[in-house]
Length: 397
Ligand code: PMP
Ligand code: GLU
Image (tube, rainbow, N blue to C red; front, side, top):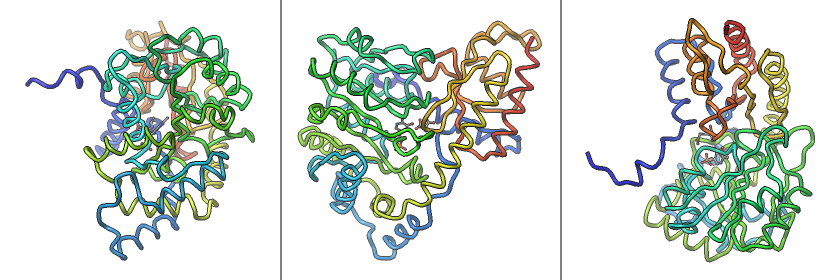
């Protein structure tokens, strides 16, 4: 069957694919330990679920304005002021069906044929494919653990061309967990100020920070960049609301209005009930978030120590998000029953088949020397999974 060219230029989201595979194997009764999914294992807090129930009972079940209700926009405006000291008006906010959808809208209203978007690697899986779908070209800046997976002003300067349309920043980062400090953002911002492109700041892991690490957005660090920064955030990770599909973007009114126009011809408004729930998430008690962060930090410390204890594996100690991103390249060339592990995909396939552990190969994030383990799963699962990985690595010859 003939399909449009654009769909052949992209891959299905590998993170979602691996999660689906692990869930399917589990459903068949196979005892899989899943480190694939980037979604909190916690339940959505009760106060948020209550707000959704109220919305249904009160009949808040119709179309809303395409870019979100004023009530939710006001909650987002208050959040951005409170947490990020960034001030926006309602016409500078657009709510979408998840932060992924906000990012999709942004790439479609900013990027066209011939445009380049700079993406630090390792990167979250959807950035390059969304750029490609919009007709643009992803330009990667390679990083590794020797620089804590961070780009430097010098590397950024080298990646910029006359075609640069945007730079993507994701701090805390999926998959590495690395987090930029205010000083580092000031230095990167100084380079951005010399040129004329947008900055897409994906702040979805903003609250998931450990070791007392503070969060900073580039527009907060360098206020002169606010006029060309698209701040993207959402409720999926912070409030364990991945299935509710609410994300948002804040930025210049002209871009926001174009995003809303795009959305009016695609999904229309995000789910009305989920919008009510998101208002409660942002305005209501943050107690459960605090508890979740404490638990994630314990898991992070445990998983990084366990991975570093496995011969041939070394793991960067991240400051945020809920992923461990060990370097597994010293295992390449080893084999099990004659089958050589040559890359991260071989490693992931070996663990799934022989150890019943699902993780995401680093190649999905543009970094084949690594693998990603999400620790958004119980401590019990983490221990069991790490025991299995350790035994499987020991079995390699
Ligand atoms: N950005 C990053 C870095 C992510 O890891 C995710 C998780 N899927 C998203 C954006 C999108 O989240 P959502 O669409 O669930 O809001
Ligand atoms: N962001 C999560 C992850 O990286 C969810 C999956 C996805 O949206 O791609 O695993």
